[in-house]
Length: 122
Image (cartoon, rainbow, N blue to C red; front, side):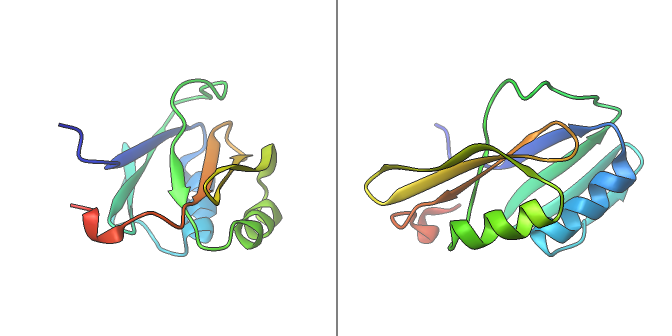
């Protein structure tokens, strides 16, 4: 059985720059910081940075991070250097998503889902 999101790993060409940028984006420093992997605990979930990973050409799985105010987060994160890859859209039932491109070639996707039940996180 799938129990929900646990880890999102982003390959990065410049680990130091990525670490600084993601620390600003999530407002928390890494709990694990080694030359081969940098790990963050973001709301009980893992964000990992994998050095020398190059660029995934923005293909593959999309990982969505929950936010309360999607417009404010888009403004904040684009001010840090991200660009809008896919505009904010209402995908139904008051759920809104957006795709941002980080400075390292990854998609950083955000979701505002008023129906997300935090008590269901295990």
